[in-house]
Length: 262
Image (cartoon, one colour):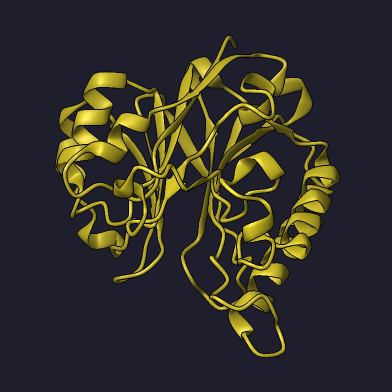
């Protein structure tokens, strides 16, 4: 079982890139974030043609949105409003067939704005509250579960190109890192990115459009794949697909892929 996640930054704009990735890497399941499209306008045809006949889409017009597409049968399991304002940022499915019993949660955590202070930047407070709601949810999980997506936090010092320079930059501030750590501890989530690519090895998933092409490698590890401890023990590999960041008009994020022996 091969599961991938990718913040595509508009699925309709980059549908050809999604098709190329699916054709070349052939994951069984792909979780997309920031699809930026309402559910009734989702581009189903390509996925159907490539055999991704099972789809769960939680979208909205122009912003946010998540979609899980799969060759493996599943049933939609949940849609949590961890943002508490109706934004489309999560969809969960329960795999059937070869992956029967696995819960796969697809999430797009808010970026949090530019100022790391909830008193002057409500978006930052919303991000922290989103994570706290996820933490309460994690405490109650009693099924083999995987949660993947754009978490918009680079937790480790080696998860950013310059730890000291980014300590006050949203995505790497101490309060975000501490809040994410509480979420991870609530279910003893295993960070598969660091299980297979141990710190301090380079493991970036996002580069700003402003800096990447200057070849400074100013990356951050904002995208993650976490698993319940028993499920993580069945993971056999994990890698990132950086080549997509070099494609024409790419997403600023790259796909991550985890393989399981179930």
